[in-house]
Each structure stands twice: as C-alpha cells, then as structure tokens.
Image (cartoon, rainbow, N blue to C red; front, side):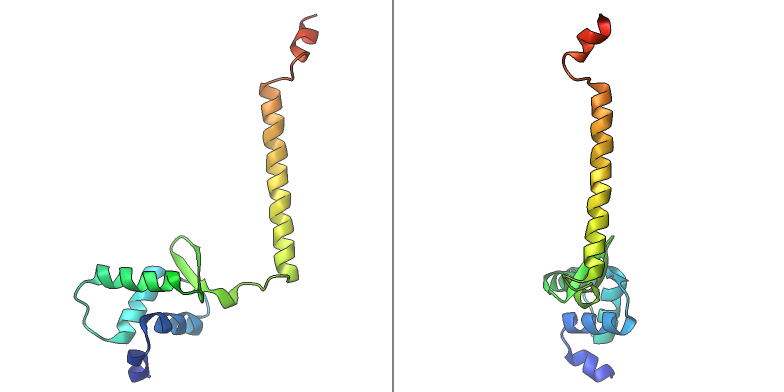
Length: 121
C-alpha cells in the first residue's frame, strides 16, 4: 500500500485518508498524514502545508466544515433531500425569531412617532 500512496497526488492521498477515516479532520492532521504517506523529504514544512492546503481548497471533492476542519462533499446530504429541507426550515425559523426579537427591542428603544405626544397628554 505504501508504494501506491507514493504514486498518488497529494490531493488524491488526502481524499483517501479522509475516506478511510470516515469523518472530518483538522487540516494540519490531514496534511501531516498526506506528507507521511508520501514518504518524501520535506525541505519546508510550512510550504508543503500551504501547497497541499491550496490543492484541497481547490478540489470540489473536499468541503470546509469549519474551524480548519475538512471533510468530503459526498458526506453532505444531497440537495432536495428531506434532511436538507428540514435543516433549511429550522435555520429560517431561527432567523425569523431572532429578527422578530431584534425588531421588538428596537421598537422598545425607539417608539413610533406620535406615541410620545399621546403619552405626555
């Protein structure tokens, strides 16, 4: 297996590492596994990390899942699936509730014109 890994491109090896793990990985850990799998001497670790990170970032098979963590796009729910629709509805509902709460707070701080005169009478 080691010889096959050396023949793969860095980004293909990153894909293989993630596919075998089955869950997202922090980019430094992922790239470390790639460099380890290639088994070639690295002159500049920072340059090697930047190069592999750029390749992963440009490859549509990978998705950034937050806080420096990368996964595979094939792990994401497919568009049109019920899970995606439910998630979108929940996010939309949460956004509407936050918007309504913010509007209520603003209205409390700044009463509508004309109400101030009525209160003073």
